[in-house]
Structure formats: structure tokens, C-alpha cells
Image (tube, rainbow, N blue to C red; front, side):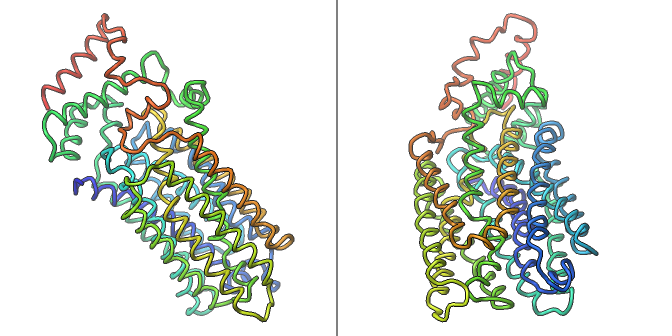
Length: 494
């Protein structure tokens, strides 16, 4: 694996760390009584406002995806990531200085806006600089950084419990800023992706980036890499209007609707797996089985390690070794079993039970669930969707998938506190059913993309490679001759 590719992928994947911290910090923030009293008054309880604080973050994500679809193509993947880091810093500052619920909600909205941009563009950037044989591993680095971010958020929240007064939650919220600042700075030291450069007819720069990305390869390979990217983008654009609105319309055309639906389904099922609910509301769950206060925060901190361990296992044993489809359907079956056990234990040992073995077993299975989610899904839900789209739809298609994910997250965030309060353990049946359905779809209908270039994956959906169809494009005219000549010129220059 090219060390330069790995280095820039790690810089960009730091966006996953920003998302992990921003998403995870709210769980421990809600667990601090000082926060609840400050925001909700002496009762320290308000299920609707709690749901609003969590759900508005997901609403921000939804808005961020619309910005990314345009910005990533117009201004580049690189500078879109940089802007997202700046917006995340601003959102964290608002939360840290929040004087009321309204200001807190505004801060969470901007943090969500930034993370919606990050989730929509970081996998695209990494996929476009990764070689096909290592793409599952390299894109998986984002999942690794998300897990580290979640873990860091849990321990930052736990450490906040040792402060006094409102510092218990203000200091942890402020710790969202360093990662976002570093992400923005890092973007000044990474290249544009070669596909974006080719798409904007900056061929010399694209050639230079390809050489840096694959500098240990032969000149023949470098020439073929450029030619395949150039010709495929030419083929995709032939006879099409590629402005933003037309591109979004194309996502729902007969030719691309299956790819769009598949990407949206995978990202939505990532939410309906139950992972976000367990992460954001774990303090409520721990309280329901008898663990509160600093003990609850300590358990949250230990819980964070499980995602990191699972992600390490993914990178070592699953990434680019297992088939994508096998990883997803086995993972769905695993989560079904884990949530079924958690639901049974929650029903058998409700809050206030005198037998500690039941609550302990429930927490143990939550930990195993976290490990399994990281192993099978934390990276894979980003690897597969970003592989499905052609260049001119990639950022917009993934953005739409993240939008659908955010909409599901908004609904879950708003109803979860109320559902836990009114139906308790029965709420978990929703996630058992959704994981079962997802596993069925993955097993029977998901095409396999492992080991294929981003251009070759189009074949799985009925498209032909540019090498097969470029001869069919009308090159008799002046424009066609120029395109042909440019491709040959660059190939010979390499």
C-alpha cells in the first residue's frame, strides 16, 4: 500500500473523528445532572427538549448534505472538507457558550451541518484516491476514526464529571473544537482528487497527482489509470447536462434509481440497526437497569473501547478480505441476535430489580453489540454506497444517502426518549425487525463490488466501460477530435 495514499487518507479520515466526537459527546452531556438542571430547570427532565437537542443535530446533517452535493463538485472535495471543519468549530463554540436551550440547539444544528458535509464528502475523497484492491481498508479508516471519536467523547464526558458546576459539560463540549480545527488545517496539505481534476479539465494536475498516488507503479499502469478515468468521465457526460439540479434528477432516473435506492437503503439501515439510539441514549438505558451518575458515565467510557476494538478487527480481518455482501448480511444477523438478547434481559430484569446479574448481562451484550456493529458496519456502510455512483453523481448520490440517514435519525432521536418512557423494552423489537429485513436484502439483492475500480463497478448495473464504448461516441467533430487527442497526449506524456 502506497504510504502517501495512506497518509492523505488519514488526514481526510480525521473528519470521521470530528463526527465521532460531535455525535458522541451529547450522550455524556445528557448524563450530567448539572446540564439537565441548567437547561430544563429544577425538574431536570424534559423529554421533548432532550429529543430536540439530539434531533436538531440530525436536521443539520440533512441540510449539510445539500450543500455538499454542489460544493464538492464546484469547489472540490478538498475545500468542502476544510469548510466543514470551520463550521464544526463554530458550532462547538456556540454549544460551549450556550446560555439557554435555544443557543444549545443552534450549536447542535451547526455541528450537524458540518458533520453532514463531512459524511457526504470524506468517503468520496478517500475512495477517489484509493486503489481498488485496498479501497475497503482505506475508506474503512473513516470508520476507525469515527470509533476513536466516539470513544474519546465518552471518556471526555466521564472526565467532565470530576469538574464542578457547569464546567462538567461546558469543558467536554469545548473539546469538539481541536479536532475540527486540525481537520481544516490538514486540508491545506492534501491534493485534489484526480477524478475531480479530470472532471474540471485540469489534466496536467491530474497527471501529477496520479503519479504521486501510484508512484511505485509502472508507466504503463499510470497511463492506463489516467486514460480510464478520463474516458469514463467523458462517457458519463456524453449528451448529458451535469448541472446540480439535472444531476439530482438523474439520481431518480431509470438508469440510476437502483444505485440511489441501494445507497440510501444501506445508510438508513445503519441508523435502524439501533446503533445511534444505543449510543445517544445509553445513559437512559443504564439508568433503567440501575446505573446512574458517574457509574453510568464510566460504563459509557468502557463502551467506547468496544467500537475501536471492533474497527481494528475489521481492518485486520475483514477489509478487502470478505465479500462486501457477506459482511453486511452476517452483520445484520449478528445484530438481530444481540438486540433480541438485550430486549429479553431488559424485560426480565426491569429497573429496580434486586438481582444485579440481569442488568450486568444486558450491559455485556450492549458491549458485544457495539463490537459487532463496528466490525461489520461502521466502515462498510460508507464503503459500499460511495462505490455505486459514477463520477458526476458520486457526491450528490452519497449526499442524498446521508440525507435519508439523517431523516431517519431525526425521527429516532425524537421518539426514542418517549418510546423508552412508555413502551420500555418492547421498543427494541423495531431494530430486530429492521436488521432482519436488511440482512434479507443484502443476501439476495446487493451486487458485489469488492476489488473493482470505481469505473468498473458501473458494469454491475448494466453500464459498459469506457474502453468498450468510447468508440461509439461521435468523435468526427472538432470537439471529439480534441478530446481524443488530449487523452492520447496525456497517455504519451506519462
